[in-house]
Length: 238
Image (cartoon, rainbow, N blue to C red; front, side, top):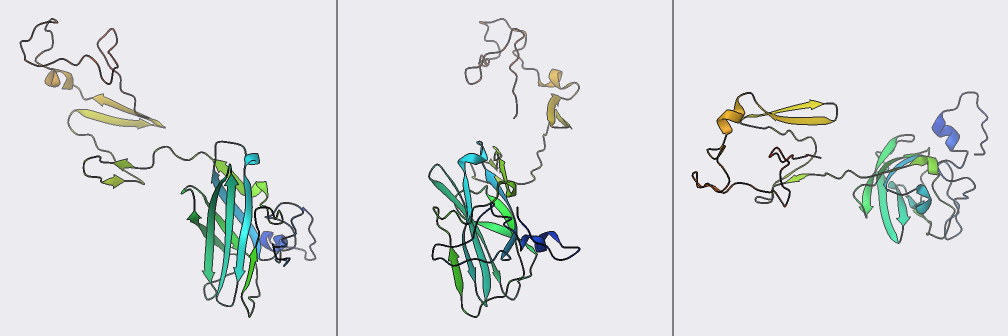
């Protein structure tokens, strides 16, 4: 990335005001109407994009910037296979601080897209200015080093199908009765406490097949899964 620095000790964000970063090399930041966005408006950016494919299938760009005496706003989009995910941030001028990271919030699309953006020292204009960069513009594409591609978590929440109650975040699971739970690294183990097997043993234990002394119907399979040769059905929790 080309850069010109005329100070002996320059901060990272200050240097970015003089170069293309966080945009791809050669991006002119000329919008659809021919207006040029100053390089010191956005000086740092980090995005997290949900994806199981390589970054080459994504087009990530700055969609718009709005500057006025009252506010600073920016919107970024990620496009892949016809889908568009967008996030934005709006900062009131009274709360605006240069070189302060601001969290980007979902505007439309997936819940899993996130990021932060840092603005430079901006002279807010007397009259509102809006810069728009369409998908075919190509002058505000984000540099690949600013984007992290990751696979979203498969488990988001526990939902009670009867009550509809929903639990998410840090959830504590307690086991009552004769079950002992333990954790070792990323492995969770459930086992019966000592002596539980004799107390929980069914009255049908030991009966020969065909006998109906206890009046209960024995479990022969769970969801079509039959026990092994020792009569055990193993449940795996993922």
